[in-house]
Amino acid sequence: MISAELVLLVAAGYLAVGLLFGVAFVTVGVTRIDPAARGTSTAFRLLILPGSVALWPALAVVWVRRREERP
Picture 1 (cartoon, rainbow, N blue to C red):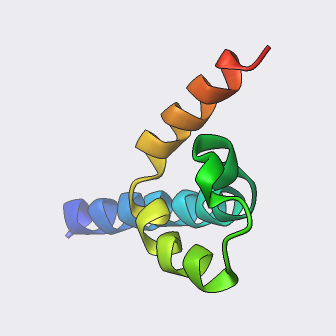
Picture 2: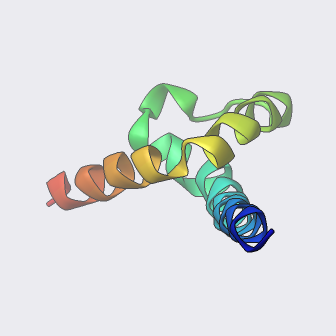
């Protein structure tokens, strides 16, 4: 039972961090990673939110690398 609780706790933590990251990403980060996303609608940003929550570690790496490339 303890291992199942640990798995659920880790999954909940991952999703909580992902949700915080996802909101920041769809409001600010998506335009920094992809300039073509500038001026996109709220519907588009809501559409990419679940993916950004699920894939937040990979997107965070790309976002940081793009930030380091800027002069």
